[in-house]
Figure 1 (cartoon, one colour):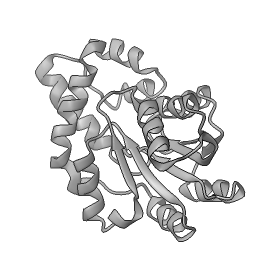
Figure 2 (cartoon, rainbow, N blue to C red):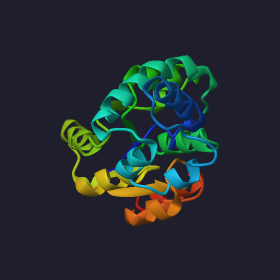
Figure 3 (tube, rainbow, N blue to C red):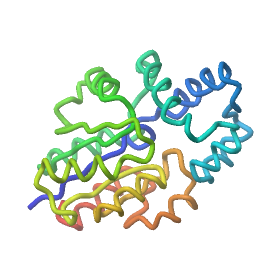
Length: 212
């Protein structure tokens, strides 16, 4: 039976990094937290989430609140956010093969649906599963497998951050890390993904060898 492919949203499917940095900085300025800047972003991409919090003077227990605030403001930036280059072709290629596709994200489901509607891409995605918990993706993946009747060997999770790969490995899924998102390549390699992709076409090619 075909593999089910689940994608992270921000960074993986869409080029929203600049918008998220801007929205985070708006919150940080009001709360007195450190800003993300051109000077520190490269370093932050190499660090675990809790170490990023330390560098930005963000109390870790405030992360869920920050995620909520950014998510609420995300809709204001939706018109400026586009698919990552090559991703639309990847999704249409996989759909043409009959692969079922899901999105598993810490963004808000309505934000994701609004983006898909704007790009006439709603039909490409079968399911959307969201949680505001920064480290709650393993739970979302388990829920997806239960609802879709998937065994771990039939699920592939594609993400741009260490925590994405970690969540996929936790549930026994195969994992693909992508270089075009937020986390630095060395940080991605630390998570030990099954495959590390430089371009979306490589994702389709790797999946083809696994009968996806």
